Image (cartoon, rainbow, N blue to C red; front, side):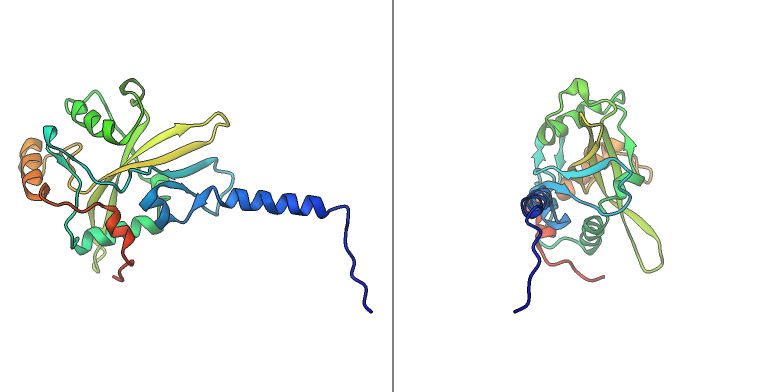
Length: 216
């Protein structure tokens, strides 16, 4: 009969370590699931960077604010560039580390953005300066030309252990949170045109993430 060697002194330690690993893993979700329902996303890589990504549970929930003509609902059959943009975001959430611009709340349209943030963020107005960022989620065609399809808004949170959390809070596919001038039209004209064009849609952005990722 062969003998089996068992380290009786480390049995408890091994079980404890295993439980810690399971508990640690349960804190994080796959990117697709986090984008749909919210949660933290774990990334392998440079562990020296003390930062983390979290998705708000409202991130992919669309809303309509008639008072300021804001809407981020999508059609039942989203255009391919928007689907591609969401697919790229799903596979590269770390883009927020490289591409982000802090929001200047001293601008004239700050009140408008505050009303949108009141839906998606619990931060008081007085604490939003310097903590709300945005970046352009882009897509590229076969010629390598990039198009800025959707704006993504992110909230920066600092924890007691000095870890920086990048929290995705909402999507703006029609650039209605902070309208900009475009091709000779004023920001107000762009806002009016885009709201009139897209406000009748009723599907949530999460619908894109819930469908099978398309091949492009």
